[in-house]
Image 1: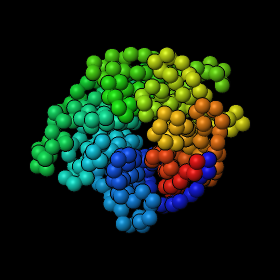
Image 2: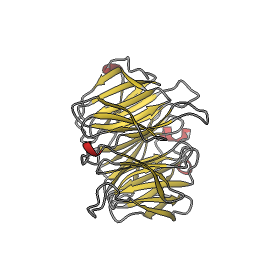
Image 3: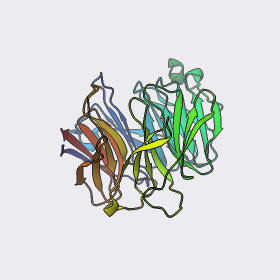
Image 4: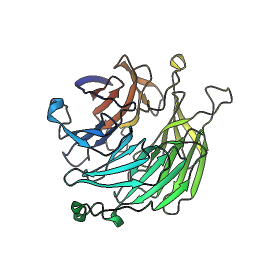
Length: 341
């Protein structure tokens, strides 16, 4: 496998945590990419997957956030952008109709959000240790009524006391919104039933690398496309693949010579699939604290790519299809790497 740097987009940002969201459905040419550029604005790159346009040609989305944006998500129809902020709110903005609503209920910064596969539910996690779900369709968010700005969400559909420390990451399987995974600074990974809010399983992050008895805070959780496995990254930079139904780690990806602690914004992690057939290979793409992009073969655990893409940290990674990897670094640069198998 080889990587080729195909494009680079430099932008100005005052955000301490530069977040990245990607919308690129398999059976459509539609493309949207969102990057936070300050506490209240989001850069929208639309229908430009090869990043050929100048920064001035892209649209800026204004929000009413007055503190940093921690996470951005794009709805499954590509029409609504949700942003989670240090001001403890979530804002929903329709790309054609403008601002829809502000979700107010968390009592601390909102760190992670995720739309359900149908787009009618939004899940959120916070430093207040709670997990919340918001019923969007019942409130009319995705209907034409929102153009009159009469929309008001009075509160979350459910509130779940999820962890004993802040929630940093959450994810929902692509084809199944009945379960949800969370990762927290308490070192636990939890699987929830989204219909009733019950915790189905708690996974304890095993310490097979650094046996000092310390808790390893979880900074990223991500389901495989088939929903059977959970990719997890901890604050020590170790990446593990869990068979969460069996409650066991099936793969661990790390380099003992490059063990570096990471901060909670360095969460670049994603799956890469070589194709859509059953015999397609699966890879893990990892952005590191020291500015490298690593790709591991899931079956063999071998590192097939290890390249320096920046002198500073790789803060976020998103994979599009089987041949494009978008990377953000902490110098406010967005890179597009094309993959040659």
